[in-house]
Image 1: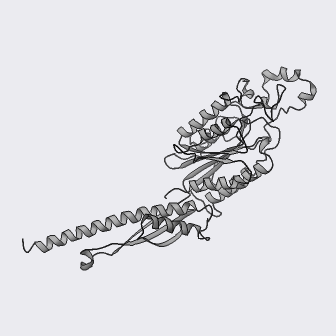
Image 2 (image 1 turned 30 degrees about the vertical axis):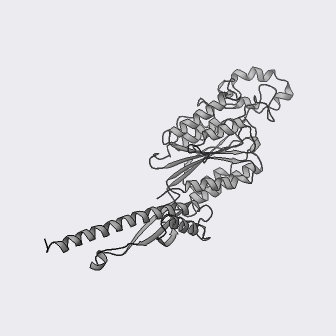
Image 3 (image 1 turned 45 degrees about the vertical axis):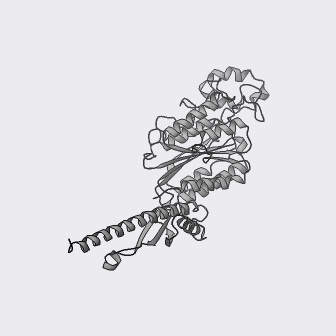
Length: 400
């Protein structure tokens, strides 16, 4: 026993030292993970790490989580639009230092940023968005695309777009659908339904002359998920919010945003929800509008341009935007289908709306319980770029 005692004490000392190393490294790794995530949130404001904003956020977060840790490097990660953090911490040794069989320092590293994302912009292109509002939305969308897909790089990130009014326009690439604007039931929208043409011809000429039977050709074509940055920006820039209008049916925009993000037909570019974080950014001025709601854009003769929307277009004239009406309920239903498919919805309400419209937008947003972290209010056009940057910060919250 006398001969074994030094050996037993040595083994016990090594066990304690190994435990200290493990605990210190565990604390350090947690601190470095937090630092990388904090730094990634600042990438929208410091994308190439040249302003020191990312570096400051990293060091502050690491220090807050482990005061004894020393950040040794903050650099761009090997993944696109990411930040890599390396740090070290000293370990108090009992025996291993004397024996010279271990370092007194442990190291840890972590990378966080924007990757494995599939993002679809679902944007209101009705007449109330024309001019400066749609211009600011396009600019903010392009800036976010720049963050997700930098020039000269091909990250594992895809971007798509759905421009909606009273309906959505698709190309020939949607499996099982005819090219053109779509009705809510998946049939092709041909303007005013044939069942309503007798009412159309019964109108006085001065009313008929103000109705456009083609409210589709000015609506931008939806873009399936793509990694081609030039194609994405070109698609974003097709939005003008001008031309013959057909109202605002938000549910159709959300529906086609879901179709684009999910891997099943009609579009199959989407990845598995286990592998990709799927994001839908819905921006509208907050009102579902079909000409029956009153207000500025009400048409007091029937039929009218609104009768070319996705519901009237399939022969249904009982789906209106009254509070708790069909259009509002379908908007909630489509948002729930998207969430069930693993899609996060960021909802942006532009302009000023009543409490019903605000609550609808808050309800469709994928906010954490007790928060509105996925809902954004943008009453002025100048608010739009900052809202997109705030969304960009949330998209960066991902360890790679």
